[in-house]
Amino acid sequence: AVKDIGYTEMHGLKSLVEVSQDVLAEQSITKEKKILDEFFSALGKTPEKVAYGEKEVEQRLIEGMVGRLILSKQLPKEKIMKFKELAENTSADIYIVSNETQEGIQFLNIGGFGGLLRFAVS
Image (cartoon, rainbow, N blue to C red; front, side):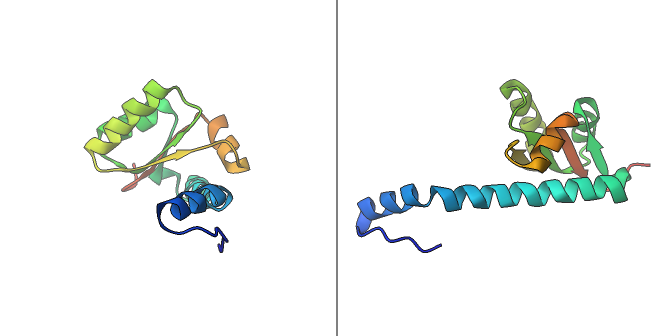
């Protein structure tokens, strides 16, 4: 994006961040949609490489199987913190998604906990 701010140095940088909020929000939503599209695609095509639901995702995290953890921003903070800690212990990537997109709402409707696994579960 190109933004005209009219200032330089620190004040210009602050102005740039303020006027770029729409672009930054769009970037975040694009990233959310991409990871959720990947999750739902894998759920349909290779369900053995996906975990969803609180108990299943927690178990797969404990086993070190989750490569990418996806959590809904709507979950209670203590649950998010617990799952983030489990993910950090196994070097899983963590994605916190909003419900500002259709994909985010759909993800929340299946529980708000998901994981793309490092390898298939038999």
